[in-house]
Every structure is written in C-alpha cells, then in structure tokens.
Image (cartoon, rainbow over the protein chains, first blue to last red):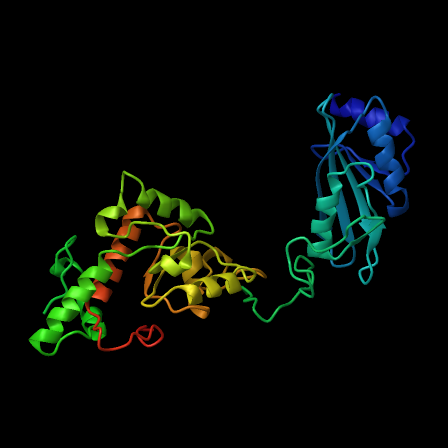
Length: 151
Length: 187
C-alpha cells in the first residue's frame, strides 16, 4: 500500500491514538493501555497483516520513555511505526508483545537490559548482555565511575 | 653489540636508544653465547594465541595469510590453547565483560609470555575512550603490554613491524635474569 492509503485505512480502523503522517513511515502513537490491542489489530487485519516485527527500541526523553516498534508485512512490504510513552521513570512498565510476535522476546529483554523498562507478562525477563546489578546504561541519568565524559 | 634480526637492518630502526635500555644480555663470552642461542630460539618461534575480538582480528588473519605471510618471521602457528602460546596479540576491543577472560588467558600462558596490543581499542579504548559504559580503556590496565601497534585497524605490515620489535626485545633478554613483564615497560 502507498503511504496515503495506509494512513486512510489506519484512520478507518478506529485506533485510539494519534497518527503522524509527516515522517517517512506512518506513525501511530498510542497510550500504553491500548498498545497490545492496537498491535493485535495491526497483525490480524487482512489489509495490514503486519506479521513481522523488525525492531523494538526505546528512547529516554529525561521526563519519560518512548518505546518504538517497527512493524512490517511480508506480503505487502509496508512499514508501520508503533509508538507508546511510558511516563513512570521509577518503575516503567508496559505490556509485552511477545505473544503476538515471538521475536519480541529478545528485543524486549534488550530494552529491559539497557533502559530498565519492565514488560508485563513477558515469559523470561532477564538481562541479556550485562551482568546483574549493572544499572541501565542507556538512560540519560546513568553514571559509572569508569566513564570518562567528553565535555 | 647491536641487536640483530634477520628481517631488517639495525640502523633502519629509529628507536634503538630505547631498545638499549631494555637490553640485559652481555657479560662474558660464554654467557653471551648461551643468551644468543636461547634468544634466537625464542624470538624465531613465537606462537600466538588464537584471540581476536574485532576488526583488528581480520587484519591479523590477513597478516597470517599467503600475501603477507608472517610465518616468514617465525610468528607462525596459532595455538588454540594459551598453555601452548608464547604471545597474545590483543586484536580488538576489550569490554569489561571480556576483561576477566583475557586476564585468565594471560595467566594461563606459560613463561616467557609476551603481549602485543594491536590497534586503538587495545591501546586506549580508541573510539570508545569517552562516554562508553562497556569498553576497557586499554589492555594495559589489566595485563602488561610489550609492544603497542597503533592504527584503527593497523595494516598487516604494521603488525609485522610490531612483531619485529618484539623479536628485537626478546633478542636483548638474558636467561640469567628472570623476566618481570611489569618492570620491562617504559611508560
């Protein structure tokens, strides 16, 4: 589908969230509560058929986190970006998507490892690369006595 | 007496002054002859450990292949076990998680053992020196380094030159003095 078509059909689906049309890929920003439902709709609707999660990552905005998913379809080859904000910095928690895309398991473990965002209902939420007690190095307020800052 | 190696003339090296500081062999003719024999053997059969952590490792493999062929210099058989290796070429980035492994490999090597720090990452952390949570800032924080080879990554010729420098260093050793790697380092 073309980008404009995707945006039209997204609007027609009644997704609870904002649609940003100004970027390269159509972006959907949803509240954290409706993330799982939206993802399920994108996967199961015959016109989107987003059956492949390309990437899952997170951004630290100092006030909140944004978790970003890139979804694609192996039949239609379009890309849809799904975003959600996590406002609680102390105990960030959102729903896992690993029941929809099994590939999300390791991607979410990596996000947990580097940002400390917890995924509810994740089957095996352990650290992926770093040792226990390391801290979350991709958070903006992370410090470490070994780091040399470039000023 | 000048330290001679087969591959390059003594006067072509530009750092002979610092080499003379490290030189320990000498004394009477009997001892010097034994030193020369032992050092000849050690410097011409340096067996490196199979150890490469990133792109410098590719250059090290290139130095071992037919085009550059560092077997010509005696640094030849890659050993899979540290117990059979004489020299460890630290080729690549060492992260904090890898550091204890490298230290253990070094400790498992039998004396005399030598370390070549190859490339910017092994020397100082290189591009990861600032603002990195994961990278060790130079392997000399954990093991004593004999030869530093700058570059990112160094060309195989640079590795060959580094190996020749190590051979010159070995040629100056004396079997009467037990080698203390920590003491031999000029900072």
